[in-house]
Every structure is written in C-alpha cells, then in structure tokens.
Image (tube, rainbow, N blue to C red; front, top):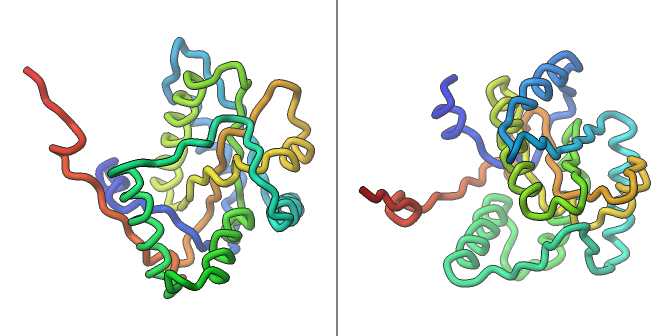
Length: 220
C-alpha cells in the first residue's frame, strides 16, 4: 500500500476487535517510528504502551475518575476554545460521528456514554500514552505530533488501526501513578490501537477535508 493509499484509507477507529497485535509487530512498528524527525533531534517522546490485563486495570481507573465529574486537570494547555471555521469543523466532526451511531442531538445520555468510551480505549487491545518533559512546551508538542503521525501510518501500513485521543491527556493523575511517571513528565495525549471492528456503527463515520485552496498558498 502506498503512502497516499494509506492516507486515503485511514480514519479514526472507535470500535476494535479483541485481537491483540503480536509483540514482534509492536516492536517493529515502534522501532521504525524512532526515525521520526524532531527539532534538533531531541526526540522528546517517552511512550508507554499498555496491553492486556494492565490495560483493563488502567481503563477502570480512568473511568472511575471521569465518572466523578470533576473538571479535567491536564498536564498541558488544553483550554483552547475553537472559533469560526474551526468550531464549525469541530461540530461537524461530532455530528458525523453521532449520526453514524444513530444518536440524536438531544439524547444527552447516549452522547455522554459515547464520550465515556474514550477512557475505555474504545475496547482496543492496546493504548499508547505520549509523554514528555513538561518544560519542552510547544516545541516538544510539535515533535510528538510528528512522531504520533509516523506511528499511525506505520500501523496502518500493517493493517492496524488507531484513534488519536486528546481525551487521554485530560485526567492524567491516575495514569501518572499507574505508570510511575517521574517528576516533571507530562501526558500530552494518547492513542488506542488494534484491529477495527468494521461492523460497528462508529466506524462508519467519515469526515471531510478542506479544499486545497483553503489550506495551502503557493507563492512564486
């Protein structure tokens, strides 16, 4: 599969089969992702991949935390409020997902239950947490974004699907304790991954992209 084909076929998967990715493939993918570029080659990512019973244990901890209905306390700034076209795209993405799942706009309970599935990792067999030293701020975040994109493409090349999740950085404290993160390390976001359940309604959702003229200016 070419890179263009991978990009055209990739989407955010929100329902997974139980089948785990074998350990050799995991090692291969994450080793290959080490070639991702970073500013001054600092390679700031410290990634934690959680699977099996440990993943289920962490899921229960996170769901218990979220169910307390306390405000998020992220390690990094997640307070941006989208405006204008960005807000329209955010709403459009949510509408596409809930429509695919048959959830009405005014059905708050079902929407909340669908949202809660973020912290159940959408039943994926694996979840990755992307962490970095907090002092690195925006430059480290840029590098980790490049690294995470590299990972998701390498996974898709092998038929493995994924979903990037900012939600997994919203309630970091139980994850800090579970993973034993050192002082000064923060969780930026996470990624659930495995093999897509192609029959799930959530996986029928597709989002559009802006026209090239709206996104890129060619000068000269």
